Length: 250
Ligand code: 13P
Image 1 (tube, protein in one colour):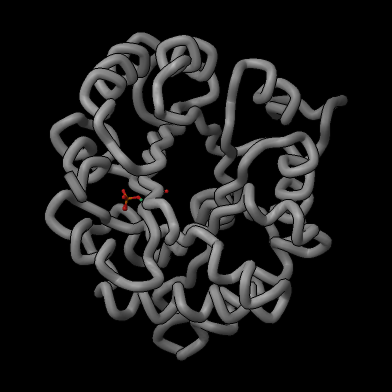
Image 2: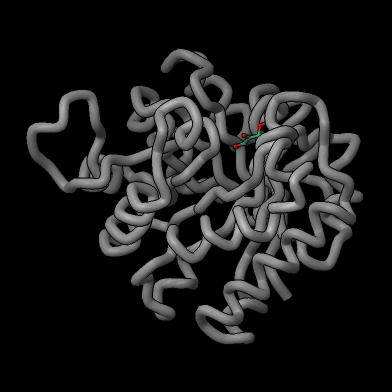
């Protein structure tokens, strides 16, 4: 049985004080959740939100990370800086990073390996564009993102890995993949992981769906066999929308 894993990616929203206030509200509201929970504020808010989440059941996530440990890399944030302030999880390979900042699978892989080496949990995002879906290339694209993103990742590190399937066309658009379409891709992700590692590793792997997850669709998504959680953008920014998602099985 895989534990449901609901995560909020706040993207470039909320100042430090807004993040602290919201995190306090989340700690109060979500204490009864039986799921694994995580929120990923902007870098600047991480230390202050870490203090709020300490002792709660909500994990602290970062939205990105540099592929090097330190050095002359203007504007970057390193894995040591993240672990130092109490970050537990890092989101890597998000489609906004892949498309707006041209992150390649090779770059994402360097980040994945570094994060795992330094003890962080990783959420590796994969997903196709609408053109790729219309060309019938979903499995080719997602398969390559998995194989290249996880290159040289050891089987023993997989217990700290989550895959987030986020079809690019469903992010921030209000368009959600149907539960059946999402589940089919999640099943394919499991097949790829099974071939790369083992059927047992594939069964244990937690796979989140992301893309316009809302209180109104979370239950039908979570009811699918291969959907183990959600990586939520817009609806993670307010208590009215994130609480019903995090407490979907209450
Ligand atoms: P939305 O929930 O706003 O579609 O964003 C999904 C996402 O990109 C989460 O990482």
